Length: 480
Image (cartoon, rainbow, N blue to C red; front, side):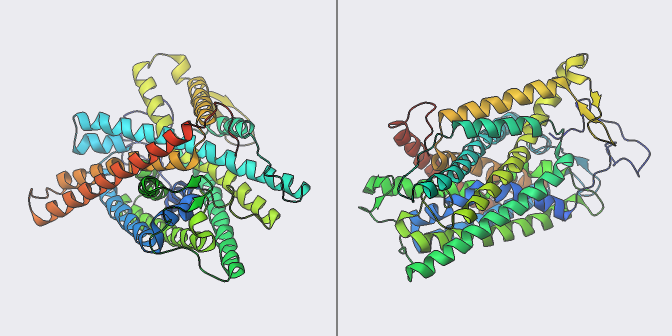
């Protein structure tokens, strides 16, 4: 839940409509564009770099079709979820500040706890995935410098641990930003960076296709017997890699777990649901266009040997300076994306702490610090300690298991069905009183069941990939 400060629990309405919203909280200021920036920051993340690899596993037919299907499902279920921000009337009903609040208001029972576990585990895992991705990009920058010095012949393996630690230190600092409302500028910078490195990857892909004078790839993807950077593809590996690619694409589209929290930053009128539907349409349309271009152009450039990370892991090698700019843009974007994903988890823990220990000065007191002229910064000791421990934990786990593609696939598989499909569908059915066994009810259940099968298959493929990685894995030796 996004809280304005640790004491901001169930606030009673106030009279001044100029300063406060209908729930008594400070006036929200979000628009279609700030909401779109938050979504794009969350969606066009490190997942876009693995799409060429994902398309390579399922080919020219399956790749684009799968991305279009995921985009449609994500957009449709997101519009269902948008309608759950308020209970009852879409303009004046009671607000649900978090995904869990929406579940509690519409479904209740054990589903609230189940949603919380899945949502926050997924957010925690995403922080780990982004820490790994940032290290890969920083390592790529160092590697280009090394290869320039050695004429491009030295593979220049670099240990990524120091970069993960550096990324963690930066996140400790940014994690002291209290909530989403104060993150808008970071999201806009991150969104610009995501467009930047995606455009560079797209441009390099087109130039590679021109250089090759052919469009590589096949209708069915990687064929059995193909020699890839990770070894020769066997029939069993072909199946698991296909499943894993579904998880990677699912991860690339997932943002439902923070949609309600983003919607809670939007001003009204107009009704928040209308603003959020527009932001969702803009964001999904833009990301799908980028994904189709980056995934397909990357596959056309590299074919069956498409790397797991287009800009860092054995992908493009020249021009060095442009790749360095792209990888630096990735790191800047991931700094913002990490915060967008972690803020709901931060706020949930801080609200619970304030509820359980309302008399604790350590938990509730705000210390005003004048860092710059103007509004002072509010430092809370509990926020400082717990968020620092959180960042240190995600950094440590990232150093222990730096498996980029497999981690992305598993995260996508775990979060896609319950958070993107099942809960939005079930809440919509309850909220709109959709009659059981009616045409609409059956169609929604078929959609949910089909997505469940996809999630199970993707999770299985990713687990097999992680098990395979563990066979050659050495703790704290993340050589990329």
